[in-house]
Each structure stands twice: as structure tokens, then as C-alpha cells.
Length: 176
Image: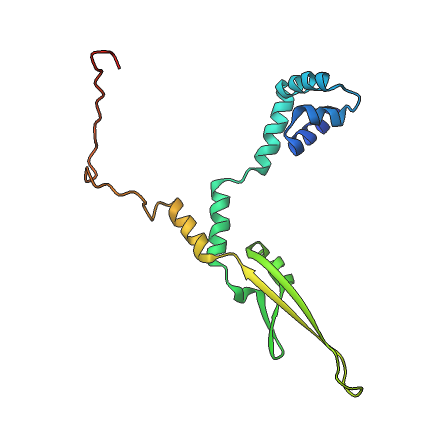
């Protein structure tokens, strides 16, 4: 399946906007709105264009296994994997975390710099840099996995004790 440069550009714009008329007008700016609508409809029904769109969406699609893997990584996330011991305190080693593929576990990073001005001429100004890191909630990730695996059924059957219930509808004399 080979698309022309214009058709390929249309696919790119369509996947960015999800609006055929606007995508067509960006690729063919001299088109009227009506002709863009007609032409984009024709392009979107073209088998090659449709296949190109389907393949591109498939590349972006996140399957259930990938979602569960990310949630499992969050549930197993350990702040200790981000820390290194240099000197009196701990340092956050984001370079190492990135190399290990752990940065996706970070929900928020907050950096704060405080400047302390010397009180007298003999003292020196100093800066203190604080870096806070928050990981995604491991308990929430574990709960989502548990719900997916149906570990926490949220149904309570008070009437049938698990037996099948058969429902029969009977029509009234008037047909309702």
C-alpha cells in the first residue's frame, strides 16, 4: 500500500484533527469548505487511506496487556530506586531512573531554591536546592489491577444464592 505525498499528508492531518474537512483544507488550502467535505469523504472511503489510518491508530493503541504492565510497574514502584546516597542526605538520581525506564512512575517533581542572604559582611550568601518527587499511588494501581482481575466483586446476590433466574414476560390481553 503506497500513498501519494498529499494523501499521506492528509492522513497525518486527519490523525491530528480527526476532522476530514479541516484536514483536507490544510493540505489543499484553496479548497472551498463544500469541496473539502466531499473530497475528504471520498478520501476517507479510499481503501488505501483507510488502511493507512487503521495502521497508524493500531501503532498508537494501548492494549490491555500494556495497561496492566504500567499499572503493575506503578504498584511495584519503589522510591528507593530513585535515590542515591552522596554525602549527608539523599539525592534523587533521575538520570539513572531514566536509564532504568522508571521515570514513567513519577507523578510530580517539585524543585525549590531558597536563597539565604548573609546578615553581615563577613558571611556569605547561600542557596539551598530542594527536590521533591512523588510517585503514582501504588495502592490505587493495585486496586485497579484487582478490579480488572475481578478480585473485588462488587455484586451481591441476595435473592437467588447464585442460581440462575428465569424471567418470563407475559402479554396482557391488550397486547402490551
